[in-house]
Image (cartoon, rainbow, N blue to C red; front, top):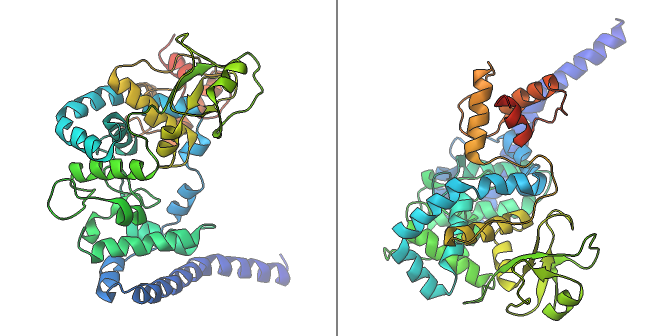
Length: 396
């Protein structure tokens, strides 16, 4: 290698070594800007210093922001683990345990208590999985280094500081999702400031330690999202073969028009409901179809993803004792419930694969092991946990 080649190599290696230093300097400069913004909004400097003490940027947070499961996971996989037998059974237990609180919230805000319960189940598995990320770290990382929506995360960071400043929560209670949502029903900090309410009468809205506060606040959120009391969210329907007509949650039309287009209820009854409806086809016209009304829009406002809103709606129906989705999803390899994912991991361990604890969480190790089994079985190596690979591992 000539002198010029050695020089280029040295420059490249130096740049790699200096990259973390530059990134840290960039983050520190951004944090100082946040401090100035915090002072302008009247948040005590002592609160900022307490919350940000020892905080460093976490690149993993940015990676997670680019791969949200609601938008990248096939809906049959998404629903298989979020609306499974365990979630339904646990939901019925929680419905009984917190019956008084849920009925009181329903009476005060006019929101179906089963929907409130379903939000709790989907968001945090009834409080078991409220999140492990430090919010000041997550939100400052996103506010300073995310490739998009930095202004949004800056405002959420400031809202988190205000929650601490007004005495609702101590900084160590600010733990939640990578995106900054936290508490039993995963409110973003700005939503917390705007809609969190005191459900247990202690004078503070605490969605981390108080289940009544979380359930009341969720009902308040849905009411503000446009929930109509004593009205349904929607129901499953059937569409004609090769349907190519209008669809979409916001493309609402009178029920008579849907009838003319050949949309029918699965129970054979005439289409009915509180006003115009939209036709949701989450997997296209070959999969399940749903007519949805304004209350579905209120659920949608909680997260902004079709799969998420359907998970809430369908879980609420099955907690009530109604059946699940009747039409088949357009796949020959349906998704796995959480119990089946744990079984899959145990079977992989029995075959000598290192996948960690069989907890049902499908991480990189489990996907790598699945890919290896798929390769050995002459299947496409996508690392996806489905019924096909589970059947192979069971030896059938």
